[in-house]
Image: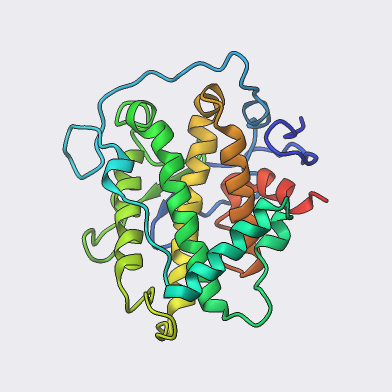
Length: 278
């Protein structure tokens, strides 16, 4: 079936089955079969008509607490890095998109600009957008009861480990995982030694490596949203926003080689559809 209701480009073919996979957070999700979205075509092509809200329940955004935390009230929009240059680069992004520019063109490094500065500005922008998107479902629809594990369909499960607060891969609910993930990203964005706040300040030597890990983990939230919450997102009429931001994110990640093909497996058909679109 076509994914045209999700994106305004063509479709990719159905794929066969595969086994369930659990991923420690230090490694990308692995599968013994590349056919990841088996029996998912009907789900991915479900229209917003008749989509009903999932049942709500109590959940947690931190550890073993029992309350559900509103993500937006916890994570504030992060300011643009690299000072005035960052503001100029953000203006370039907004201008390109605001003038009906192509998303493919919008992700390309502007002539004469520094690649790391460009990546930093975009990563912060993607983080802010994803926190907003997740908040659409977090309070009522992504809870301990509805999402007891952080998964992307029946074949991919993610476990959290950051090497600082959590030292061993920890199985947890989706809201707990996303809470850990957003705090982990926020901590790095707030660190001026990683994301410089002043134009001309040096980036760390491992900046690209850090950004690749951030991008891979942000992708997992998109995978969870599409597999577990797309119907409610349609019911809330937010699917166009989700699709556009995801498409932009994929183009950027591919342009700068930030996410491996293996890590994209849970949304392989959608990613292929994005990249094969004219």
